[in-house]
Length: 344
Image (tube, rainbow, N blue to C red):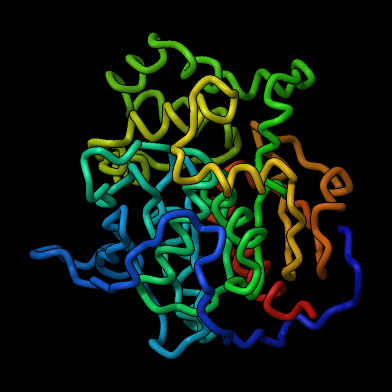
């Protein structure tokens, strides 16, 4: 563990602050709320499915915990379920007085694009901006961000570019803001091996493979990225509807092609992407986690990305955890949220 100070894990952070001005966020977005229960939808997982409308998206989400609780936004990865990932984390946090919001990423579950002509982008700036837009739609001035994989990247981007909206950050696998300027630089071969689907998705063969067999491709990723995770068929089946979103393939393919420089980004996010090229520091209190059994990113002591975290920061390696850390080791992920809330 790397720790910059000895800290109490029982203190809590106060979620307070003001709304941002919208500077550097590109075209103006709506600031209206449409939080409504899905018609005929029975509650499942961590609360019923609700919807929040932004200028670009109708974002599906769950919420759980006291209405006046400290807000925390829990963000899922690809191709994993927000329901499965946080089924144990969210209730545990609710018992600690947190209000948990669990949105579905663009292209996943019931989240929908509102306009047919919007580029189905999966780029990192879009994911970060979606998080801020989601907060605006629900009138959440500040919140703690926690996530992994695509959701961790959204959290890192939002925390770096809009620190006034973030009370703290839990990020699995450290600093996840992509360095697009170095996208063509090869990694060590054993690292590249874990990224096999990045290169598969660069091809039309890969697009067709994802389109034609979403379930089995996801199953392979689950096994390879979390090799010690003994998930059940029921857990897998619960997640499968996530991939039936009509924009799922386009968003996923664009996300991986953009990060490797093979697809242009949405022009609306150009200013944000230019800021991300500078690899901006994350100044808010942060806890980073590495899974000891991660099949994609081997665990480290955190020193390789320490310079990116300029505020209070702790790092932990979580035993018996793979890439979907909150579902595999929910107690450790919950503890990290309580820990970051105490960082000063």
